[in-house]
Length: 354
Ligand SMILES: Nc1nc2c(ncn2[C@@H]2O[C@H](COP(=O)(O)OP(=O)(O)OP(=O)(O)O)[C@@H](O)[C@H]2O)c(=O)[nH]1
Image (cartoon, rainbow, N blue to C red; front, top):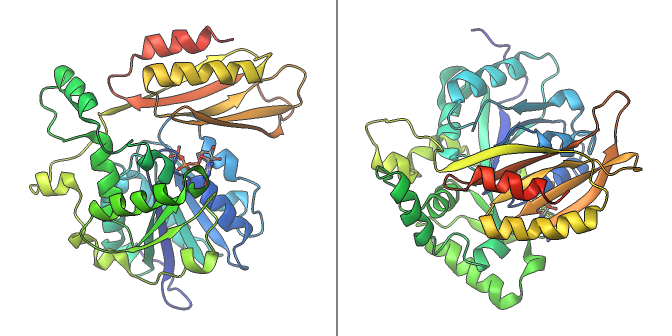
């Protein structure tokens, strides 16, 4: 493959990672609206079949990133599809005449950043692009609530169904792996906890990693573009020293997977009383320990669709855009949980709310 030579140096790429619902898309949305004149190409990878993040981002910062500069990778977690999906996508992007000033990659909330960053060492990519930095977004409220700490009951329960499970705790491990890869850690959602809580979160995050990347605090992902896009690290050269649990356990190169997690889409009809629906949805989420739920609802009489976003049982909702002519109105929600989540029971419980 022969690629056109960049006019000036390599294109910087920022990898944005962090657990499900930490605030990655919100941070990118803010970035696109305050991009200081930079033209950004966005590669978005999502776990679950609905493509909600791409929809949230399209049109929100058209000057910085037009719809054709938003590329969605939907064939599973980006860390598992590097060769088949990510490399060809990058290659196509680099072949474009009108190349971006900066590339931003949002990984799925379940992705290990290490294989993705390592892919920037592939010769064709390395000569054209460098990883400006890995930014790990942390849901401070979830950390304060112990989401990534004492998960041992869950792990024991998983072991009953999968005795080969070699991991300590899927949530804990992913949390640490995403922190391990970071050049910058953004402690997000500071509005949801007090100063003492935040201090504990800082301590807990620091205790999970041996390196000391910069940690900053944010709410609604509000971080200046100059900080997010100006790390200048060249992380592809360092990533071999930031191994994930999986790499440490399987130095022989065994493939990793995300079998510990499951997702499915629930389709419903119109929701006449969204306030009551969301209120009762909180109960279903808590009862079944749903990690993340997001999608769109059809509210009769409303020209716009209702975006529903749940992280644990905290739920946000707003009308995000009008249904377009010819678009099939309906309610579609993607549900993500640990692999022992009872899909049939969750489907039945959500369907009973309408
Ligand atoms: N209270 C509060 N809510 C936030 C903040 N940042 C994001 N949120 C909300 O958290 C929910 C998840 O945010 P997203 O930006 O979609 O999170 P994400 O990391 O992209 O989620 P996935 O792509 O599903 O992993 C949304 O409802 C956001 O509005 C924050 O700082 N404070």
